[in-house]
Amino acid sequence: MIFIVIPLYSPYYDREFRNMRQPIMSLRGTFKTIPSKSLVFLFILILLVGVYVGDLFIQRQKEIVLQLFVANDEQDVFKASTLEKELGRLFNIQKNQRVIVDDSLYVVFGSADRYIESSLSKIYAYMAAKELDILIAPRHVVEHYVAGLPMTDLSTLVETNPSLEIITPYLEMAEDSNGQRKTYLLNLEESRYANSDASMLVIPESAPNKEAIIGFLEYLFKK
Image 1 (spheres, rainbow, N blue to C red):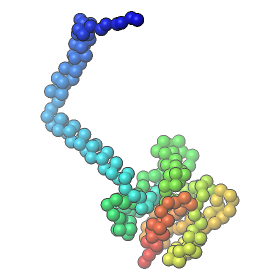
Image 2 (image 1 turned 120 degrees about the vertical axis):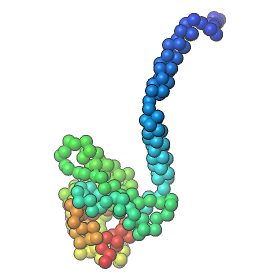
Image 3 (image 1 turned 60 degrees about the horizontal axis):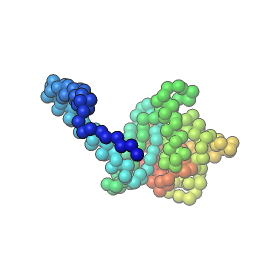
Image 4 (image 1 turned 90 degrees about the horizontal axis):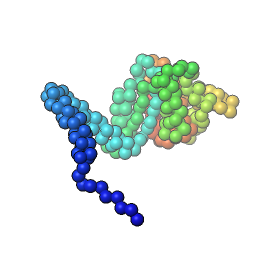
């Protein structure tokens, strides 16, 4: 059996320690040369990042009452911050709940722009993950998703929920992936959120919050 003995002290280790110590000491000197105002700004920035990350973690623990995506709303009719407050009051949101509205999406088919591609993919991903309740976008955008993923036939939703009869005049048909035309679309041009390029609404068949969806549809056309 061979034993290897490593001395506790060696000129080699001492030299290596000094080599490591020099850049550390020079870094300390660098901090000394930074103006105090810059250090304060750096501290505030780090603090804000910490608060943001903490808030993000807390938000992820909350129950999602409704998740709604809006694409190509160039008129900013569906402003996320405003809509979230309105729906918060509508659903009487509690501290452990939240409504999510993403109005930052923009879809142009055939575009190689990374932001546009990410918007297109995000909508697909959230529908496939059964997390998206509602998509509001221009007609050609919602028809694209109707042709690719299962959507809710809104006429059957009205049949089972008489309070939704107010949306019947605004239902429109679109062709699904099976080549069948059904009432998948809801035209919003006469709703409280008119005057936007994002004027059509669809509901994924896998939407998880059906009760909140019904409340939102009633709210759209309630006089």
